[in-house]
Image (cartoon, rainbow, N blue to C red; front, side, top):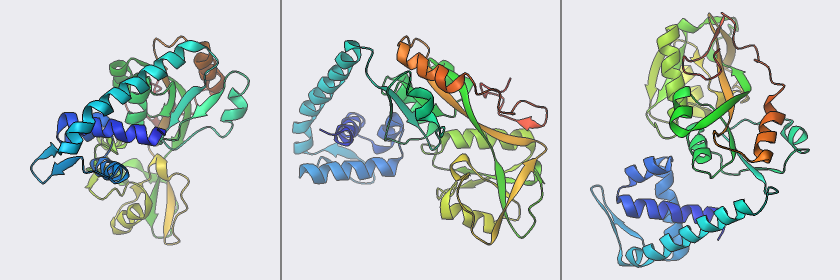
Length: 307
């Protein structure tokens, strides 16, 4: 089994136990449409239909009921294999997850202390933090709040920071006060949980206008369409920091205050593996405060790096 196939089996198990795609998606920390697509792909690969579903109910097919105990046993064996492997030696790779940003010199800074394996499953911040907590990852680069750290039993070190800017129509590239911007909040709380929490805090603290959307337009072409329809500059998210703007849009620095998004390197508080702790020190010891803690800078009140 590849990692993707095992993950699909975990999705099947969650839906089978919940008999509800929405609750299963929340449990798995993924978007509902993504879960549905993965189940369909698994059904296609297995050659059987696992669920009967309509708008009101989900139930296991006879094939799904027959395969469920075998799936549960296989996943339990896979988990035991992983636990046994972790106990064998300290030479195992340090598993690092991320959202969309990693230090450009990650390998140079860590190669002398550990074999760092960057996980291929790119997921939202809250999902990656949860994976560190449950042992699926050793470390993750993500955005977290103090409440998340306490709830999940994690520790965080400052690793990076983005100064967010606004995107606007017209030709004015001058500074724009935060109170004169719009910040988008997406109805998809599974995919955009961390950004929504950040955006709502930004609107409350600075007077920026929060605008609710339902099309995933926090990034990409849909974001640019929202900018074109807006009468105010729209705050760009961390996932769009390096995206090239269309020729009809401009970038404007946000001031009063300058707004920042922090990237934490998170680990379990009870982590005692020397290799994991060495990677944390190698990546974070020389970071400094990244210029985010002056009176003119803003971070959410619950950001662990605010003070």
